[in-house]
Image (cartoon, rainbow, N blue to C red; front, top):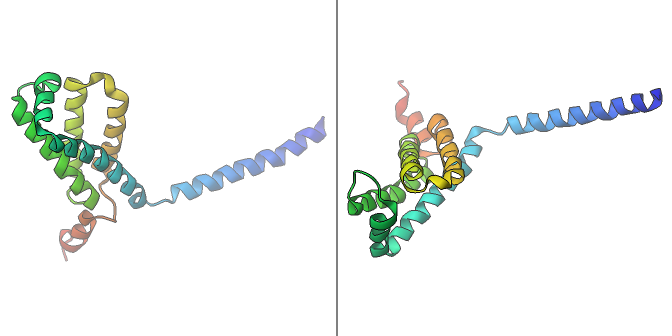
Length: 157
């Protein structure tokens, strides 16, 4: 009985050491590398939506009149605002330029979509919101125009 217990201890110990090493490697991944796929993923979702709106503007207006029904805004104005946001903020995110304001705008848009348009789509919207919150709180990372501008102009010499 003691033989199997002592044999299991080194296996457990090496397993724990292996897990600790893997976690150590993962924790050393720089945020800047993690921010790139976050920026690209969110940008892709909204860019595709914006280009779809542009592809058939009459259908877009019809959607805003019949299905989306955003409160307080006439459908044509809501369609123009929505398309403008969906076509401008993805470019900003890909470049890493004004990342935090872009993330905030898209977070607001995601909230409006969730609350007023498609409340049943919360599993998708919470994924968008999670990515946008990380970008809002941590920024674009060092592979970005934001970082370059901050290094160039943001620090007093």
